[in-house]
Image (cartoon, rainbow, N blue to C red; front, side, top):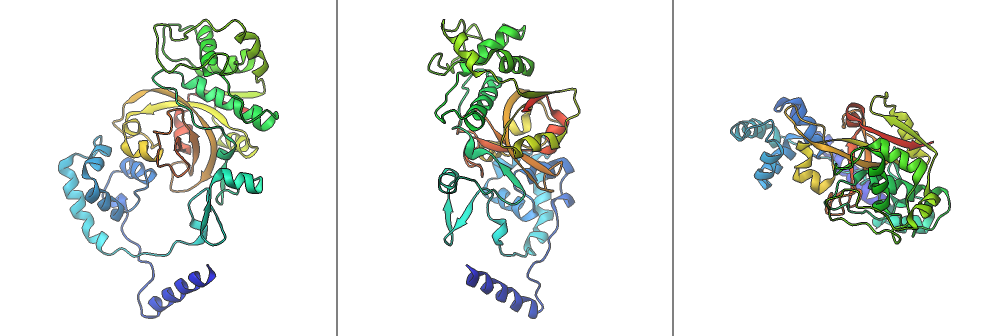
Length: 364
């Protein structure tokens, strides 16, 4: 590895000595596109005119769909034509060892070790520099199906994580989203609504708990009664065994302190939260592929609210707000199927939570 890196440095030195700089900065997307569109593209990983042009050449339909809110197809050709001179002058540089993909550790040359294998082998996980990541301590991704049960899925993921990692329960612990959601519907005052609210989830977490999955299995199929009750006779008494009272609720009217969330994640906890879902990322094929949730565009609409779980974070000045949180979703592994953090996981900018926080809680 050292020999390879030395060879790269020698090659770069020869370029500099010949008067050819090893890296030539190129124009930025900001010269061609509105700021909110640039922000949207950067989160998806398209940060230079070259990447923009490459996407247009490989999948013009996808690009037009991503920017349909802001850039009409007639303007796209003009923008691409303006970018061509900049693209022709691009310089390249090597990828240094500290820029390896987040969450991967190089061992014995270039062997890549998966998260779970790393955890089993060393007992710890070594995340990328400046990153906190609790994914290895989470249970497998679940799917809520066609029901509005995201609050139950986020809350049960939190319960399972806390009981397994902080109370010594078996990693096989499997709790019931079915019971948790029914209990929320008994409290939220909206028995007809398909979803529920974060306050109901907080109260069920602290006072009711949930039973085991085997006692009342989850059904992903909607019915006339959103809560689908009543539960089995012994479910209520069993649920009391899985109450969790040590949480600090952060409502939508509170001043959100990112450092409180980061501190909880650093202590190997996870965080339950809810935000509005904007149309631009909900319908984005790139977000479905990568899990990279983008900031809303100026003409955006909303699809409703959604509850997810924060499992880590990384400071990165390229993201709005100076970094992003790693999110765990409940839409199965079909969502974010090519995520850098694994299928079912994605990212959300700090600024998204600072501007659109609907409520949530951290372990206290």
